[in-house]
Structures are given as structure tokens and as C-alpha cells.
Image (cartoon, rainbow, N blue to C red; front, top):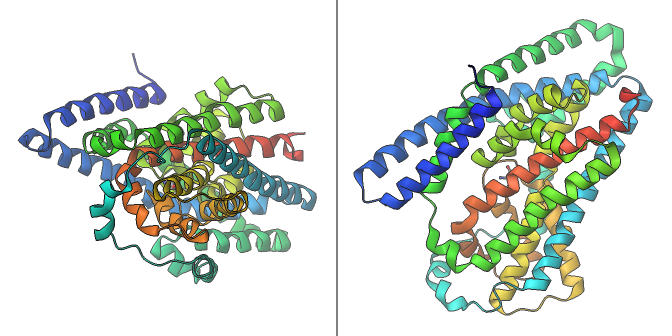
Length: 411
Ligand code: ASP
């Protein structure tokens, strides 16, 4: 009997968690611990490297082909607009949820900040103001495409591909050959993605083994109320709000959606990277959820770097947590500023592990909170990052289904 890839990935994930817990119980002093951690690191690293290897060619071909194929102007217009509305509306909902729950439970208000003083005094946070952040972000958008690709800069590659796609639409027949080459390139890349996915069960097992075995549980326990609030609200957003909207707007049931997206969600959880997960999510949404290739090619690469509900929710919640720890009361206006900054920060954060931690600095600064508090958030970031990345990836899948439903592609 041959198990489906989906089942193999599920088994890999479960074994990874069990083995990780076992290694955790042995402790880092045990020689078996370091041996297995280094094996998992190598195997998991190869899997992630393979995904990263294919990422830039995938983004380049899928965005240019995706746009070039949305030929009818009417249709292109609708895809853009619906995507944009979704990319703004869904993180807004996420942030509001995060802030509401934080105001209800106020984790951190009872913790003694002094217990973190040591870590805080040794931590050197770089000084990133919102203005500086936005300036750096904007100046990195337009780049020599070869440089962008060679450096693995997803956003700059994506922007060039958008220009290319629009130019292909304008030239139409005259650029037929180039478009054909890109279409064939995209098909070839997707085939390689399928090959890489055969390694997913073992890669995911290795990544989860390391994630679980090396997590410092003492930090998690002392910050458990905050961790519980973040995990609870992120899961609520991912399991209730987003699938609820999907069902209301498209009639796709949560069960169908989660079944179709399973491989992508597990990969997102194990890699903590929306970008690394992109090849897998594109495969799931096209093959399992039957969304039109061109819509997927446009919405998913963009979503992987710009649409991050989990990150937005986390950044808003963490800012309030830091305020509680520091004994600062944030007014409603300040909380609205936190909301906006958290959304901007989530759009600006690249889809890589702990990217949210870097953009977190500007959220804290926007209302004058101590950025040194990042030192408290860092040690607990790995498990939280895993969960928010899964929700980030989920949101992109949902967006593509909604776009499909409301554009003429489906009529
Ligand atoms: N790891 C997240 C992602 O790739 C970004 C973050 O740190 O929140 O989606």
C-alpha cells in the first residue's frame, strides 16, 4: 500500500514532535541529543535550502505569467482590487482581535519586569524608527532584477515581474514567444517543486524534532499567560474568523479548505517561513483547491510577503504586552497607532523566520515603548512564529479562493 504524500507528511510531523519531546527529555548534556540535533539540523536545512533554491525562479515566472494571463483589463482590475481589499481587511480584523483579547486578559501586568533585567541590559536593539523603516523599505523595492534574483530578494524580484507581466499584456502578440517561454518555465519549476515535495515528510520531521527539542521551556512557562493569549487568538483567527469568511463569501467549507491546504500549513509551521512555503502553498491551492493558475500565480507570491495576519496580530498583542510589563497604560489613540503600525510592519516583514521580531521594533517605537523588551520576546518566538506563519499562509490561500469566486475567471 502506498501512502499519499499528505499522509506521509502528517506521519512525519507526528514523529518529529514525539522524537523532539524525547530529545528534550534527555537534555543537551546527553551525547545522543547533540548527535540527533545536528542530524535534524542538516536534514531540515537541506529541505529548506531546496525550497529556497526554487523560490526566486518560482516567484519570477508565476507573477509575470499570472499577470500576463489576466489579459482582459476588466479582469485584471478586479483581481487587483479584491486582492488589495483582502490584504487590508484581513490583517485589520486580526489586529483588532489581538488588541481586544489583550485588553481583556492583560497578561504581563502581574509580571515583575526586574526578572528580565539581566537579559535586557545585555540586549542591543538596533534603532529603527518608523520613518527609517519605511524609507529603507521603499528604496529596496526597485532593483536591478539580476541583482535582486542573485541576492534572493523576493520583493524586488516580484516588483520586476509585475512590470514584465504588464508589459507582456501591452505587447500581446508581439511578445508571444517570450510569454510562451515564461509559461513553460513556470511549468518546469512546478515539476521541480513536486520533486522537492517528496522529501517533505522527512524534512518536516527533522525541522519539528529540532524545534521541539531545543525550545527553552522555562521562558515559555514564565510568560505562559501571554503565550496562551497569543496562541489562542491566533488560532481563533485561523480556525474561526478566516474560514468563516471564506465560507460566507465562497461556500467553500472549512473542511475542504483545510484538507486542501494541509501540506502547506504543516510546512509553514515547520519552516516558520511563508516564502519557503510558497512552492508548497501554490501546489496545494492549484492542485487541491482548483484555483486558476493565473490567480494563484499572482495572489500567493504577493501574499507570502505582504499578507500576514498572524504577524499583524502578534505585533499588536506583543506591543500591549510590553506596555503591561513596563507598567505603561496605552490610551485608545495609542492603541489605534499600534494597530496601524502592526499592519504596516506585517506588510513590510519578509516571509522568513522571526522577521516579525525585526519589524516589531518600529511598532514599539511608534508609541514610545522600550525596544529592549524584544529580549523578552525573542526566547519565546520560535513556537509562536510557527503558529503565526501557518495562519499567514492560510490567509493567502483564502484570498486566492475569494478572488477566484469574484472574478470572471469563474463565471
Ligand atoms: N515567519 C513569518 C512568516 O514567514 C514572519 C514573521 O516573523 O512573523 O510568515
